[in-house]
Amino acid sequence: MALDRRIVELYDEYTHKPLDRRVFFNRLIALAGSVAAAEAALGLLEPNYAHAQQVAPDDARISTERLDTSVDGVALKGYLVAPKAAGRRGGVLVIHENRGLNPHIEDVTRRMALAGFTALGLDFLTPLGGTPKDPDEARALFPRLPAEEVVRQGRAALKLLAARPDATGKTGAIGFCWGGGAVNDLAVAAPELAAGVVFYGRSPNLAGVPQIKARLLIQHAARDTRLVQALPEYEAALKAAGIRHEVIVYPDVDHAFLNDTSAERYNAAAAKQAWERSVAFLASETGAA
Image (cartoon, rainbow, N blue to C red):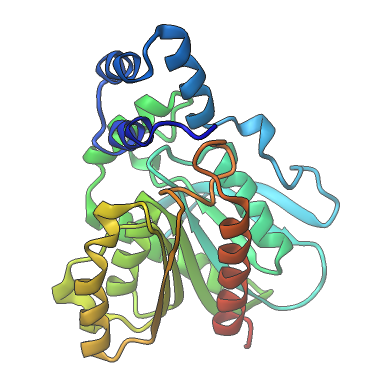
């Protein structure tokens, strides 16, 4: 049985505002009716990384490494994954949600490599000590991360991907929630970005939209009303500036519908369709030398 919509919306408030966990749980108990019911609901909403891994870290088709380097003085740490098959390929920067570089995003990075890209799951919390294991601690760090620092890291990562000997020289980015907003900001600030895929991310400063050079694929969930309500203004700005883009709003799905670590919000059909669109889009923009 599906959860009460008020519980799903409360969880979204908790993850994005964010709410103090004690405040959140007390409100959850009030909605669910008991501590036991609240804990059961939380089990459906909170990520369960072990149950959602699609590509094993030791999959024989890919090579993985823990990246720890710097580009133009910008420290970069993350998870770099590439297909073992020979050939030149596009690079894709994978930008995490506001939980940082966690096992789910590492799995998404491996999926992207299996789709034929050199994929980098970058830890954007590196300047603040890196992603902590506790997701609440991770969420608390994001307000301290300056927007200009996010762009600096993103551009340095794109440069690293484009300079690889197996690269086509063309790069894309795909981001989720906080990372979707980061893709929008990177598109404004980085003319070298060829393609950006935004999953349920906030719009950028609309004044910067005419600076965008990348082609954009913007994907949202119909139930994610806060973000969907802001879409018409962003799309109007994209159209006015002549930016190549496509906006898709998937019906009857929640924010984070691609995230298969959350049993309640994940939607397998929409996730499959959105992922296939994303891969085809990124391939068309980054795959040719």
